Image (cartoon, rainbow, N blue to C red):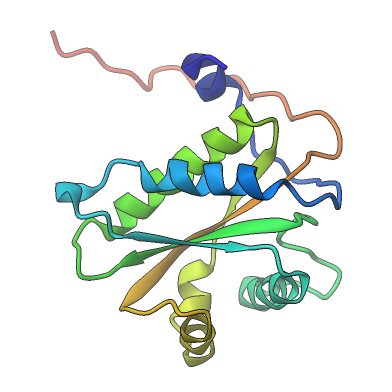
Amino acid sequence: MEVFDALLNRRSVRRYKPDLPAREDLEKIAEAGLYAASGKGMQTVKIVIVTNPELIQKLREWNRVIGGWGEDVDPFYGAPALLLVLADRASPNHVYDGALAMGNMMLAAHALGLGSCWINRARQAFDTDEGKALLASLGVEGDLEGIGHCIVGVPDGPAPKAAPRKPGRVVWAE
């Protein structure tokens, strides 16, 4: 897939089939995140690949409660996998590093024929004692900030079309 094709045609997917993506594909997506640019080359990002249905359900429920939604809302849109992006707070660039990793991962998922979507509220979930304990139980240590949940799966239906781009957002200074 051409880079520009991926950049211009990737869309957030909000409906997934229950099929779990191949382990190799999830590893490629995580690798793409690890290769994102990082401030001063510090590589502050850590990625947790989550395919355990019970853990996904726990994270889904935390996200739903933090978002203030009713029990009928699934903030992960039925995605069977997610890649949790965390970044070391010791770096002044950690949020930007994590954002670049998320972008790389969403583009990688698209290139592999998978859908993805950035889901917020990772910071709120993992700034809690329960969130920190969960990370510790997975062997994830450090003063980490949750940047986002990159949900991933096989799209259930066609990808949405891009909205027209708003004009006047590029300014030349010649």
